[in-house]
Length: 277
Length: 277
Image (cartoon, rainbow over all chains, first blue to last red; front, side, top):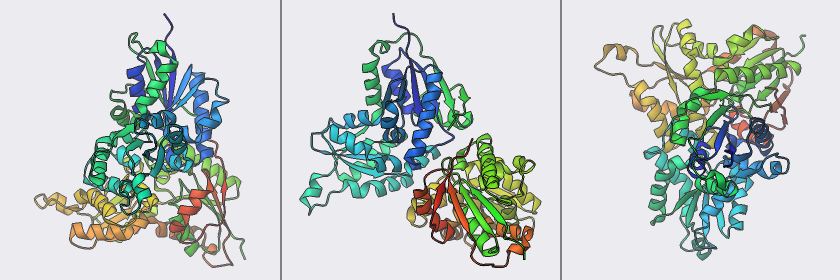
């Protein structure tokens, strides 16, 4: 029987816990180190240079603690830092953008995916490239208020619906007089930020109201877990309870308060670490 | 004739530029170093330990570049870090909270100030203490969505008005059946975050709609500039154009794009610096 692999999971804060939840479901035979760089969050409004520096520090920290594979469970870090860090990382890195685009590819080839993400992820066009590789067109829309709304706990209600309508209206309604635009009406919505799954029921409601028909919504958490399982097939069988250690670069209090709604289970203990950036 | 003093101005990002604007008006005879710690912003959701570490690094950076006095133009840093760093700082530090509370003290003694601020500032109760020293009661209300709304540019409009109504409703309407509560109806609103002055016209509108009468709104920028002028009276006379150097810990692009709306003038050049935290 193989020993349990140690999977490092890295995010700017709490959102990556939605990915950890799926990893625990698909790879119950692994142990986990989760590092949230909460001192620098949010990454979505930061530069490529800064996000790359933070991510490199996190990879050093997680490998020094025994991670044998690292899931970059943050769309912004996957978009901005993954390509440049893959070559020098001592362990394999898995990002969330490729799997997210693959999750959208159940839509008919040649159709358009609407990718909702942070400013930095949209500016990188990482999803447009990943969608193209999966045979899809992509419309990328930055939604900077979604992360603070989720962190405020406003995941339903009239105000958040109106904000979602502002963000979705122009990108979901095709111009009936413009055949090219009608062609481009998105047939699937990709949640390109690990905070957004908490808004999923609201976004499905708003998208259907705008488009007049249901628009399927996919996120990358499950697709990322499936890709990880392909690399570590021996960890897909349950072997007792996984050990999970949580680390945060800011205080544990907010992490422990906000984390459970992303992870779907309680978080007992969070250890503070400083990253050298 | 005295030489021009060099005033360091520190904020987590752009908001402190509303303070720099008032400093330039009240102390045109000084030169300025403005440092925005945009790699760590926003501070409002971070811990006291983290904010103190960041602020100490900023003080080292600004004094190494020649600052002779430093204005901590960030409410969260003033609330969480000022008291502990004053003793060891090589130059005088001026925060924004004491002056902000003084600005509110034009209201009748014994009346109540409603302080709108970030989560971290509210949790510190720094305004409650400063208001008490100025003879006022304080009701402190955290408004975590205001900073991202300002950064998104949504400083007016129905959605931001509704969010302001949610934040203000319970703290501005006194319970008519409870004489103690009626006593506590705020007679002045203090903007306890340097981003909030951009929401001032909207907040005045919403507060009047809720309270039924106009509620004066004050912010700490001008009061802070006046306090600084008391310390450096020889810099209150204009002596040619002030030199202003801008430094940011994240990239210059967003700083130059968002900064002018806070400062009220264009920002030509921003230099990137790394802080050792």
